[in-house]
Image 1 (cartoon, rainbow, N blue to C red):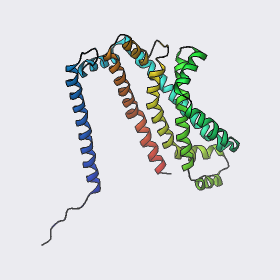
Image 2 (tube, rainbow, N blue to C red):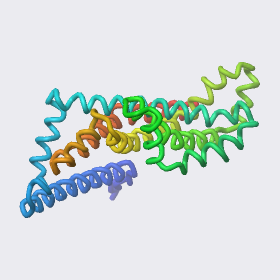
Image 3 (cartoon, rainbow, N blue to C red):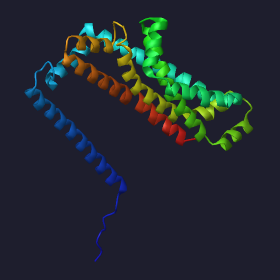
Image 4 (cartoon, helix red, strand yellow):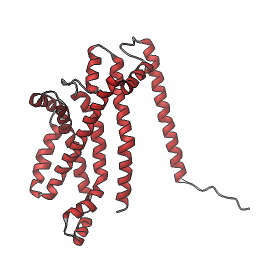
Length: 267
């Protein structure tokens, strides 16, 4: 008697595991919110506000004109700083490829300096040099984010197959063609990874940098909340950044990552 055998499907198992993982993660979030709410019932709201109070304050950030400007200002600062840092880090990573004499300068002098220089030091120096301004906040973020990008892009350059580059050069002597058609597509996953790291770290830096004398941005709102012991505003500011980061990652960074991963696979 022939009996149909059930075929093992690794794809099906992976899908089930993914669904189970998502359910577990969402369940833990729900439990955390319930625990937060229960704890808030035992403490004064000015010290530990409940999730409903914080949620209302977060909503205010995105619908009240007095707060939208602060959200927009911080977002623009982070985007500009990330773009500059990725460009500067990539340029430094490529420099030894173009000028081998700069290998030691970039990797044994500039990179250790930028990696180890205290973040607060950049903030204090920027205030002394430029005074509180939009440019000051961007400068602080760029100086702190650039080494992250430099390391990521440098690692990506090490992963590129030199034989592939030599083969490409055998077809054309135009270095720009090889850069655009071969090197950059292979490097894009590492550049996108640098963007992801810089975008996440950038928000943390922006929040701290905006505490140094500026009168706009989410860091300014955080400082105002601290000055009047308004824990709801402090919580709301932090969670607003989490929401903005999540939106940027899901709508921009993740699609770019998928696109360039597919493009690299096709090379």
